[in-house]
Image (cartoon, rainbow, N blue to C red; front, side, top):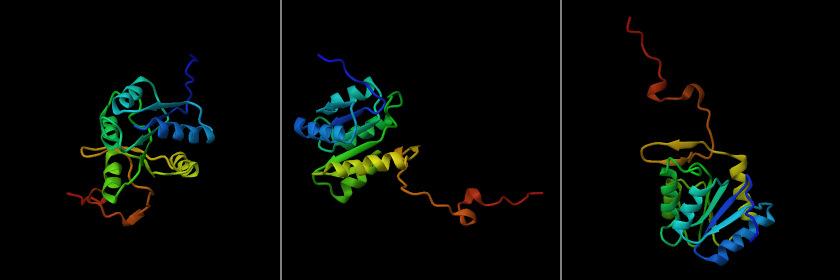
Length: 169
């Protein structure tokens, strides 16, 4: 057996279908990625995520054992996991608006609707690299900043915490 090649740009592909996971791996290799691991159920995904650092997780929504949203929510809550902050791309065959919102609220970074081509995957990878988002940790949400753009409100910021405090003296 050949030694595992571990690079800085490792990708974990998680799909219950070995065929689909392999197909995504082929797409990634065509885009220049070399270090690709596959997992076919939620327990293996969590094991791999705790075993070593990855650069990216691509996960199917319909994963065996626990769906992709639940796995991502669990990942974001694991404070001792080396991959807690990594970008997550979710794949789904038939997402509706509610499911996409649930995925976003679980900490998914990008979304891909199946079937997709390598250029769709490339656009998500490019967006992740070109527009990194900070990690938000709040009581009700842990994950990448859900805002896609920053807006400079300047002097028009009306938050109470930014209003000048009157001098009591």
